[in-house]
Image 1: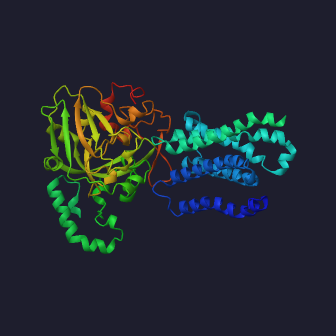
Image 2: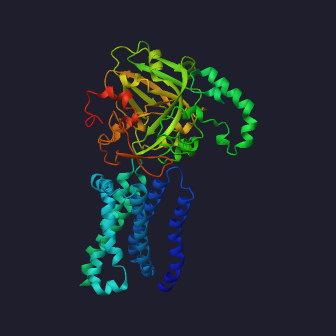
Image 3: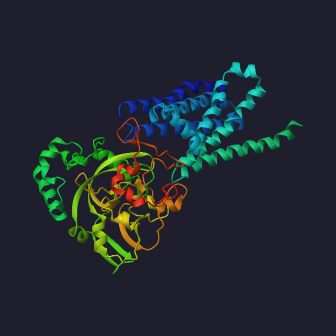
Length: 201
Length: 305
């Protein structure tokens, strides 16, 4: 049931499912159905979606350690690229719609406001990940180097969740849940690392 | 409808007029307005627009009542609108205590029969860098302060919001320390711009906007304008306020709108006026510099933000 073939088959459906929200929000934005403060709403929805997708890519790696779910890892690249897609939309909403390309203001904002700094660094770290996502790039870089580059997903996830945490004014439940999940997933990886050398011998 | 003009009207008369208008026009209005939320909405906006600055436009009733920060009903902007249906704003009393001649509890109706309700169109600037223009109905806080008869030793006024977790679901969670508290210096409280509002757009104050009575201090960030007030205390020391207690490095006691004082979370240099696409420059004291700047001439506003 959880064969590579079946996971690959589910990709088109998954593709549409993950793409759909962005199309819906774009449509709602244009038709004036995103509420009273549509730019803020659009930015929040896009950012939240990106963070959730980042966490899902981390989860996929963990799940693929469970024998019967090994093949789920074939979905990771697509979801990772979608995370980047949503981050790009989130960032361009901030640049274009929120601040109308006022670069002087934006640079000040990135430097002065820690939560924007976190989000911006997280975005920067995602660029090498997205741009080395093809099979060709894996070959060119070699798997070892490629893998090292892709460890950047850990600071990306942590910074993105901090970006959200700092933004929330009072009820921090939701960002704390995301941070908790990320920490658990990272702990699992550390645990795996520590136990692996013995297996290698 | 012109009868409702910004002329000063005693509250009783005002209410009676509203009843009369509602009665005689109800069928006509119901026939033309589909949404019941707008059924008794003032259709003649010129009443309010004549009080507007040339750069301002009134926000709609819908915008003002569906996009609120009122954590007592939840932390999302839409929560107050969605979750405030069970709140009962009447009967209502306000307790007056602290440094006053005689501590007492006023019935809201009694207060309202002693004051004059007037229209005030104010800009409201939230610390989150969005703003609106709202046509309030209310009376000057100074009128209530005169009724309360504070002692000359009273230098500050503290306000407390009602605590009713069963009617205010947001209070079931400790997002902030309930009840919500705010405060003003006495001269700020006595300033003619400072009002206690009991309505907007000619409606009784909607629950999500702070029914039945709330503070409006237009030159300060919105969180100073405390809602659903049940207690007013007169003090000789600066009172603790909710947001300052929660994050003193972000929110000060004064919280004057000031584009030049940086905030770690939002730039205060610009703001988004709800309903507009491009941001606008934030004005010093939210554009009320002429009326209030003198209150702070001896104060370092970067320190006392």
